Image (cartoon, rainbow, N blue to C red):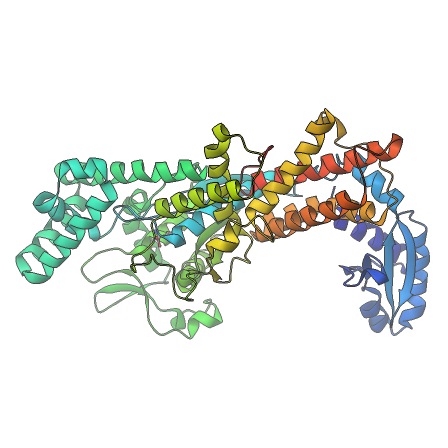
Length: 574
Ligand code: ARG
C-alpha cells in the first residue's frame, strides 16, 4: 500500500469530479501539523491557466475531497491550497489491510536492471571508496528487488590492464609463493612496487614488462596462468571481506571479460563516425559531434578509446560493457555505483552509448568521499590508506566495548556475534544514512553510539519492540495487520509514520537513495519511543491492547524489513 500514491489518486479524482479536468494534484506533506497532514497545491496553476478565481475552484475541490471518507478535515487555505487532515479511522483501515503498511506492491513496470558495484582492482587493497560502493550497491540491489525488478548485481573487477606486465615481472623476480598464499594482496602490492621502481631505474626492465604484457594479451599460456593466479588469490581475500559484509554478486564480469570485444567496439565507433584517429590514437571528439550533449561539447580533450600504441583503456572497456549489457543482456536500466570523481568518465561513456543508439537508461549512482575528522580523505594514524579488514575489526571491537558499557542484555556467549552485527551494521548505517552525493566525516564516536541517528540505535529499537512481545509471551507475527483504534495523539502519529513505509521503499529504490530508508527507520524508532512512553501496551486492556500490539508488531516488522534491505542484521535481543 502506498499512502501517498493513494492520496494522490483521491486528489486527482476530486479535481476531475469538481472541475472536469485531468490534472496533477501536486500533493505535499505539510511542514506544520497545525495545517493538517497534506496539502493539494494543484488548483493554483489550473486557475491561472483557466483565468478563474483559485479560491472558488479550491472550494469545489474541497467539497469533493470531503466526500471521499479519507479525511477528518478539509480546509481551503491561502490563495487556493486545500489542506487535508487524515481521518484516523480511514488510516486504521488502510493499515489493517496492508499488514501494518508492510506490503510492498511491485512497481508498475518490471525492469531488468544491472547494478555495477564494488568493482575493486586485482592486486590492490580495496579502499574506502570501494567499501562505499559495496555497501550502497548491495542496498540498491535489494531495494530494487523488493519492488519487483529483475536485478543483476555485477562486480566489474579491474582485472586487466597495463599493470599486469609489471606484476608478472615483479612476481618472477621478487615474489614469494608462500607470501602470495598467505597475504596475497600485500605480496602483490610489494612486488608491484619493486617492479615499478626497477622499471624506472633501467630501461631493460621496462621493456621486459611491456613484452610480458604483450605476451599476456596474445594469450601466452605461462603468463595467462600467472595472471589467473593473481586473480584467484585476490578473489580469495575479497571473498573474506564480502562474507563479513554479507554481500554477494550475480555476475563477475571483470574488465578482462570484455577485452576480446574491444577491437570490434572501436571499429563500430569508427564506422558510426563517432571516433576518428588523431596522432595515431582513436578518439571521440565531442565538440565535433552534433548529437553530443552540450556540456561535453565544451570539452576539447578527446575521449581516447585506443592509444597510439594500440592499447585499449578503461574507456574502451566501459563502452564495450555498455554494448554487451544491451545486446546480450537486454537490460532496461544500467546503474554504476561509483565514486563521484569518475563523473566525467561516465558522462562520456553514456553519451557514446546514446549516440550508438542504445535505448536503455544509463545512470551513474555517484557518491562522495569518506573524510577523516581532519576533513581530508580517511587515512590511518600513520598516514596509510585504511584497509577494509582493519576498519571492520575496529568496528567490531568498539561495538563489543559499547555493548558492555551500556550493560545491554546480551549473554556472554552471544557477545561476539552481536558485536559483529552491531559493528558492521554501524559502518553500513553511517554510510547509507548520508545523502550519497555528499562527502561525510567518518567518526567512530557517532558511528557506534546507541543514541541519535546511528545503526546501533535502530537495531536497539528493533530489539526493544521484539522484547515487548517476548515479555508478554506473544507471537509477534500474529499481530501483523488487523483492526486498530487510533485515539491518543501518539498512536495517530505512529500510524501515520507506518503508513509511509511502502512509499519510502519505492522512492529509495527508484532513485537509488538508501538514505530515505534510514530517515524513515530512524523517525519510526523515535516516534515509537514516544508512543511507548505515553501508551502502555501490555498493561492496557481489550481492543486498546490489541491495537497497540498491532502497532508495535508493524513497527518491529518495518524495522526488520528496512534493516534487512540495507544489509544490516535485525537483532532480536540486545
Ligand atoms: N575498478 C574501478 C575502480 O576501482 C571501478 C569500476 C567501476 N565500474 C565500471 N564499469 N567502470 O575505480
